[in-house]
Image (tube, rainbow, N blue to C red):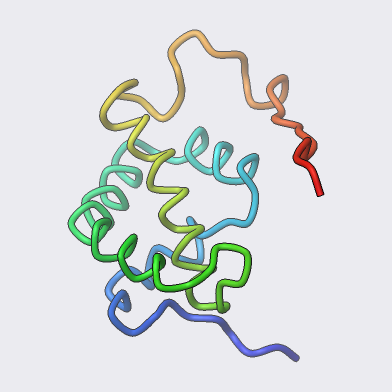
Length: 115
């Protein structure tokens, strides 16, 4: 059995959001936002926003391709916060108005970078 990964101690206040929002793929984060209520997105956004600069500074101390597990979780939470920001700041709704339903919209991608 693997140990539960928590956020770095300085960001423990965000732990209640991590289980739902710190997701490993962009597709999962997108669908989380699209399926969440605006109230839930707002609560998450309000919790993360004041700590964003501090979190980014903390993550800058580690190579992106070698983040420790707690920092990976924090990074995923910040990526989800970017999704939440779209809903709060731009759409004023969990999804883009007139967007296709979740069942018809799936993000797929492949890495096209070099070696």
